[in-house]
Every structure is written in C-alpha cells, then in structure tokens.
Amino acid sequence: MVIEVVDKQSPIPIYAQIEEQLKSRISEGEFLPGTAIPSERELTETFGVSRMTVRQSVTNLVNEGLLYREKGRGTFVAAAKVEQPLSGMTSFTEDMLSRGMEPSNELLKFEKRKPDKVIAEELQLEESDEIFFVERIRYADKIPMAIERTYLPVTLFPELGREVLIGSLYSYVEGSAQLKISGAVQRMEAALAKREDAELLHVETPFAVLVIERVSKLSNGVPFEVVRSTYRADRYKFTSEIQR
Image (cartoon, rainbow, N blue to C red; front, top):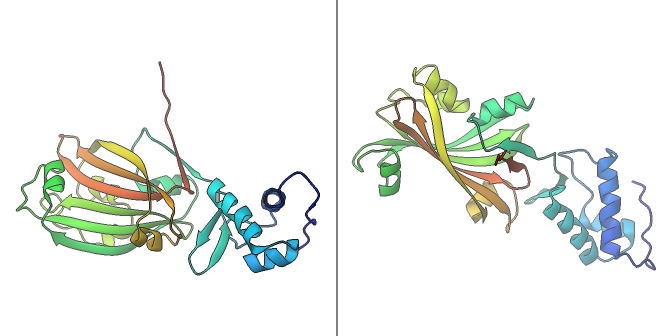
C-alpha cells in the first residue's frame, strides 16, 4: 500500500492529514465497503507516527460514519448509509430488497409469554393473555443492521411458526393470515447501545444507535404488533418531508 508521507511541518495536524489520506483511499476505491483497513500497528508503521495519533484519525472517521469497528475483528469501511423515510410503512425485508440488498435474519428468540403492563396496553390485551415474543438480528448483505424485538398477540396469529420469521412478517400477516395492515404510530430516539446489543451488532461501546418503537394496526384499528428496533446509527439516516 503506497501512502504519501505526512508533513510534520504543516500547520494541519498530523491526525487530520492521515484522515484525509484514508478518505482519499476510500473514495478512490482502494478500500471497498465491508473490507478491513490496515491495523493501527500497520498504519503507525506506514505513517511513522504514534499509535495514539493513528487511533485519533481512525476514531474521527468512525464518528463520521466512514468506518466502523467490529469487536475482535478490526476496523472496516462502511457502506453508504441506508436512507429511510419516516413516512410510509414497509418491512425490513421489503425495504432491503427494494434497494438491491440481500436481507437475512438471525432468529434469537421465539417464545410465548405473558405481556407486561405496557405491552398489554399497547396491544389492547389483558396481562393474562398470551403473546409471542420474537427477537431477531436483521442483516443486509450479511452486515448486522438492527435488532428487532417484536410482541404479537397469539390470538391473531395462532399458527405463527419459526419458519415465517426467516422472511417478512408483514408478508405473512397480509398473505397467510389474510389481514390488512393500515398503518402505525412510531417514536424514535437516539441512545447509546446497551452492552448486549453492541455485541449482537458487532460494534464496540460506546456506540450510537437509533431506537424506534412502532405500534402497528390492522384496517379495523386493532393493534397487531409492538416492535422495538435498535438501528446502528452509522448505517442509517432517517428523512422526512415537511410542508408548511
């Protein structure tokens, strides 16, 4: 790998010079999305600077969303962020397919349980009723993008099985279950990933995430789903069109 030598006499800080050179290699396609950049040790030797300086440069690029770290594996070039409109309602699978990306799921939990008070109220159930709890990691092109924790009334989906959850839940709802989805109410907030979630998303803490809670309803107004999704903030940006 050929990289220009940093100018230690320049008024531009050395870490900033390294950042610009790494950015240039990324934009020129030398480092492709999903591939690892050289290790801190290798970059230290290449530029002839301290490891602390290299770490500052790389951390700044991680914060900009150009790179991302995976625990125990290294630092990788990030793909362009997925731009997600806040209006409209599609499943993760449908959304990724429409972008030409390959969606996949890792099913972590699928179990029946009793809802807590909050979930029961949101689904208009009694706390004695049963719900399905589903926990999945959602991937796009084999990169973990989000964790979804979904709560569904058993009475609406008595035949729901693990095989359904490998694909699109919404396709099952409107296909096999023959129900019509009308819309949802959702809330979004920024947060730092919990340690458990960071491990599932293959990122190091502290790491910024976007947490979205959605209550989805059928055409008759009955809520059929509460889903709490934790998205990697380095892979998503949400947009909204506003008119006066």
